[in-house]
Length: 457
Image 1 (cartoon, rainbow, N blue to C red):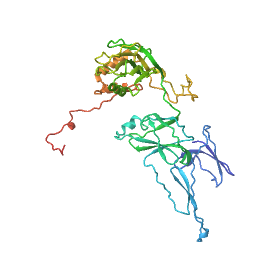
Image 2: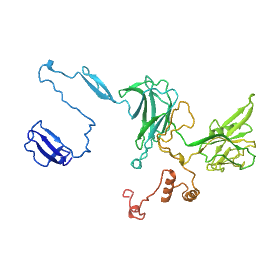
Image 3: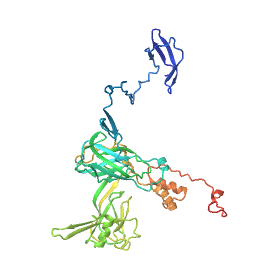
Image 4: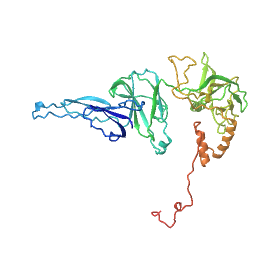
């Protein structure tokens, strides 16, 4: 430090202090001349006046040397190298110099790859790996153009002979968003050596490079699954149909989250053509037929389909509308939407979720209790903050948003439209300000002279 004293421990002690430090040339300038000059081997002691200074730490150390043959003309006195090390793909190999070798090995992968090594094989059951992907910044997205090709990734594992394909379900959309990679642990998963380490390796290779912004991974977690702050209810009887049009029923709990399954008990199995339409809208398990001991049809439960309104519903369409805030369910009038058959207690919510809200937005590592015991689960925690929950929208807010919706109709035309639609896109957005470009449409640069030729224009 500037001003620190320096003491020359020689036969005649000499003292001075540091006047200047040049870090580029690694030189010190003292405030006085050293007389007599210290000779080689003289010990120089620096006493710091700053008690906060700590000894320096060495991050890395490199050693270089030059090897020279002995200065002799006889071959027997020479000592040439007999071996050396080559380093390719993070692997050191000892090379015998008695024969030729290839010092630089070509990489077998033409595209980038990510290797994941594990100390033990996966069991032959469903496995999930969580990939937390860093979201690109607005600056990064603005500096790139849209690539028409989508990135494609291939997951592989080593089966003892070669790299085999791992059939994985990718929720991350090729590392474009956070999510789970799900697969069944392969039974022939075999350890192999990669990067000088013998582990059980998974590999993901890029088949095409179509990223606007290269993905960045923050962390990779095992034993991970999605969780939501909800209550799931099953087989809740809403009532029975009286055969009248526009019947209304209500669930016990509200609001209702997406993914509900409403079933209606019908008198017989629907015709084949109607079955195809039902399964197209509500999957192949939409019709449940219960038979007695003789094999006769006892009850038939059919899953109906939710629509926003009945304007496009036909007389045989099994449709209903749902008010998610109040839990109100309405059926058609027979002309626009089928009326449920008149049977006692034949309308039920086979499955629906409720609750949620802002109370579920908990910080990281706060959720650590199991309400019910689950086999093979010892403890739980949320390594990321829980988010996305929001409470019921106040009436005043609905009125304000309704006026804006009538103006823009989900189409951005004016500056205010861009601000309103951007603000509604995510609950994480606090404020939005759109800046319109300034230009004068009547300037000379924007007008074409009809007398000019196409080349001059």
